[in-house]
Image 1 (cartoon, rainbow, N blue to C red):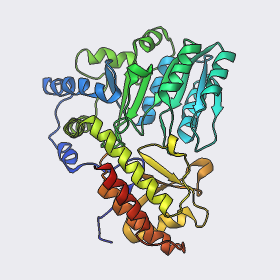
Image 2 (image 1 turned 90 degrees about the vertical axis):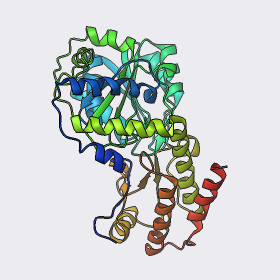
Image 3 (image 1 turned 90 degrees about the horizontal axis):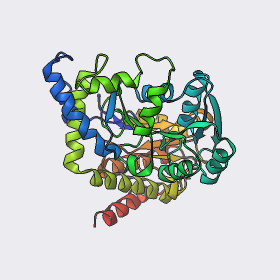
Length: 384
């Protein structure tokens, strides 16, 4: 292990490209200057394709959770009824935010590792006609599940006038997203995952239906008042001090995504998912999610023959490889491999090789190279 060497393979924060790091070292400028307005006005339209929308995308200086809270406090108010689809820790976070603002929450709790069942959504919507909004998570980071957002949206809109609000923090920018086509009313992501930036920016794409509701909502809010951000955007600015250096980084991050091409970005993430899952199967590692529900950005493994935390600790000490552990009910039960953003098939091959050594050190009788070979085979087939 070399000093200052680190291999970060968690589902956020993710590694930052060197060119993005360099961009963030540019000299500071006044955030009310014409120079800032020029930068900001050029950035805003470039976010639209990533969300699959023609709507403007707002930028808030805050973490992804600030975007989730902004969605709640702008769309609903105390006493309103909402439905939250909980498939893991971050669906649960949406419910907790709503409850904090005294909003009446209906929950559909799904066993962790499974995707949202559409019929349960339909039943709940048909039984509760006062639901104003439905909250869901696109990629549930805590389990590696990718929920069927387009299908969920269809069910909601067929049975109600409720708004559909989606946390896309751990997959937008890595997974094909079609906000307008799918019928999502408010989509949120953060900077520190597939967008290849440090934590500190939240992005929100908002439908016309949502704006009509937001304009009539008298729920008190200040920093997270989206009407303020929309008004300032018309002047190519933000209502409060923006994270200027992060916006420099965003400019370069968008350059990288556009140079690669979004469709190629999505294919790369699908390839890395298949490489990781094939390697795990070859090594006899139980996957938490079924293939059809697996996210292209994070893979969760639930071992039965060894301690996931002991494995993670060994890999961190021996190789400076950081894997994520489980959250809440899965704490100590799983480990998670992040493969998103500034991550390539070469990184996956390196990670699998280190994982094999860690398994041997944990007393698991695995054939060294078996998982790596499986991942290599997927890569070679995917590159044809």
